[in-house]
Amino acid sequence: MAQLFILGLNLYARFSFQNKSHMKQLFISLFTIISLLSCCALKAFEPGNGVIIFYKVQEIGDNEYDITLNNIRVGTIYKMTRIVHEVFSEGKMVLVAKDIQWWGSREIKIDIKKGDTIYVKFETGPITSGRRINIMLTTREEYMADIKGYKFESDLKTQENPATPYISANQNKTATTKNPDGMKTGAGFLISPEGYIVTNYHIVENSKDIAVKGINGNQKSAFSASIILKDETNDLVILKLDDRITLNPVPYTLKKEVSDIGESVYIPGYSNTSDGGIMMSNGIINAKSGYEGNINSYRLSTTIQSSGCPVFDSKGNIIAVANSKYAATDNSGYAVKAKYLFELLDGADKKLNINETNKLAGKSLAEQIKDISDFVYTVTAK
Image (cartoon, rainbow, N blue to C red; front, side, top):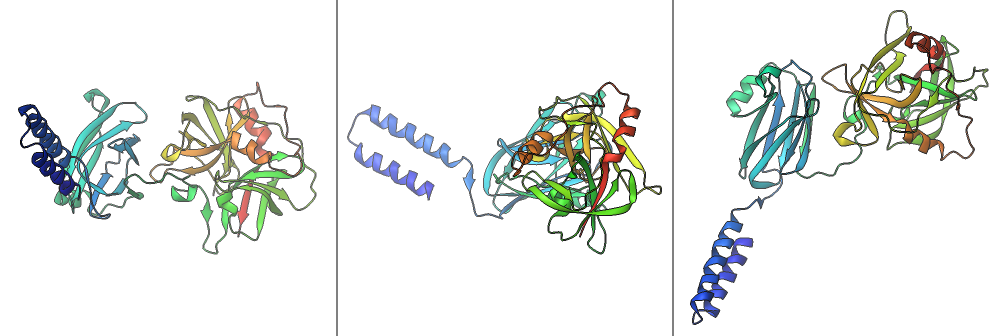
């Protein structure tokens, strides 16, 4: 349709100016050239008629690459990942891959036509090579040979120029255990001796029965709890213990300010261990944004034992609530920033008695873990 319109304009111009000066004839010629060039630009076609498959089967290295096509973000690729990207237009595209960890980038050009399926393979090169990101256009035969007998742990489907809603933990990989009977298990932590507990919304979503273990260090007894505040968008929930239980004052504080990249963090929580004891992992903040660039989360380089675990900085402040991890690796994940927890608390009908005195500051990591062990819980929901 666009080409017919341009052709019509050309014919009209020639007919109107055929007896005019050579200058106008020159103008017509230039207009014709510009029109032809315009026809060579990116053209739209019906959805579903073009696909680009990005994949990385190389199992070494934890490098993550942010992918954009013509400045439109596709997603993040890392080891054992495949992204099937549905394209709604044809023509030349510029693919840019940025190494999130090392800040390097590479770009290649892709020419896609209606009905094409294009295969793009990613590999991590050695540091000494000076080229950490290797991108190759491959054929279907090479692609089938690469993935033969291979199981992708992260298999995403995207569309050209999609909306970018909040990506919940369930769309990545939650650190929540779900038993065959439908029981979901995660973690939570106390924020007030009045019995208020923080956990993730996806743990208790659509649940009728919520139970909490670990109260005052007792992992054998379960106490019922109810939802009093929830933020589905930011995957946060405030629970209230149904029973009146004597609880010790909380020794830590919540940090509203956003922490910096490179800051040390640690995450205490419970896992499916034989002794059922508390576990701890530590690392750093890799980025101030989470999955797909969501600003509500941090990206962390540490193992997340369970969704709902508190994320502490070295001074004993809770800076975030862990809620998901990469499907491809156990030492990287995301956590919702504590500032969104403050926003949720502001919506309470009455002001909650939240601790404002940090009793962990200045203590060693071992001492901090010992002091907080009675305030980190196991949350089950069904």
